[in-house]
Length: 218
Length: 218
DNA sequence: GAGTGGTCTAGACCACTCA
DNA sequence: GAGTGGTCTAGACCACTCC
Image: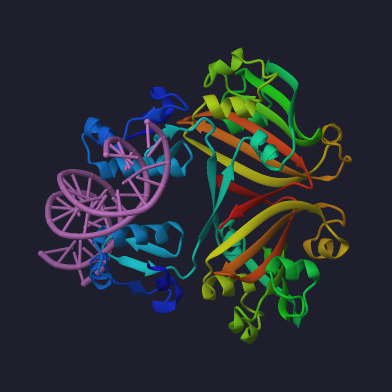
């Protein structure tokens, strides 16, 4: 309905009519106008403030959306057959960097799980994950030999917020071996941090060969 | 309100009560329940189908959100001073790969703009952009010496959909020179394709030094 | 104080889809 | 056919913020 608004009918920076006026001129109810304008506000086309009204954004901040399936599904959706291998599992003291990201004392023992996800037997993702067993105690009873930590956590640990960070690095020799690339080759790094309210559940560093990419819709 | 729903009150795969029942048990109106459940559905916690009801997702597909400001704002938000340099501007026939991505005949002339965005004089992003001037004819009258194509497009070309693709590559010698890295070093690649209805407006390849990353909220 | 958007209620009709 | 969610209307009250 209000797509025309953004395409020039009103000037960037200008204030558009109030919900009540729009409702009358479009011949619909205020709720409908409200929903439409809230959608535009969420997509960054428009800024809304009480009393000040609704303004067309001068610098629209667009937002992109990324769907995050299970690694297994990601691979299966590419038409490849999924396989999973547990590399190591231990309870140990985290290095400083990890303790800091999880916001736990460095003296707390954390579960560390390293594993490899492959498609058609070719390495797809190397996962190095830390799980705070004080927040997710059930993780201790898992062997992670058949089900990956990724899959177990998604299905068993609801979370309230999380962050995802993409970056680039050069493969270390250990990483290169697992991913079947050369040491020093560029790799795609995904770091995932997940929280349940105020407590961090898990921190994962997941790396891919350079052929990997991530596509989002805007 | 319905946050408890996802935290175990109902089993994954199970069907939860209908909107009407929930409204009565929570003592609120059906519209309110509807809005709450639609939010849960958008975030992947719940699946909804008419007649079939609302089910708790067994494999929640979470969605992450990324805000995309102007490159200039990105740099300024880091507390660095922004500078911009136009490297080249020409109208030419696109290579096959570009024509295919833009879905235009290879015989159509396209505007190509190469530019560099820096923060505190250190290279931040090298931008190689193709603009279809049949879709955005005003672009032809721009010199792009002061305002970057990124900024001009965001402020002047509304679009209906777009994609964003992140990947990794090794810097070519030309790229390495502009970004002040070594040839072969890993670089962070962002490819952006933007559409106005059925016509592609612009395709951009934007590369960053390896220190760069992208953070999203889940 | 007055006007804006945020959010709720109560009620309605429809589209879909399962039995 | 019946029950579900999708979406709309009309009206209300409130929080905020500018004047």
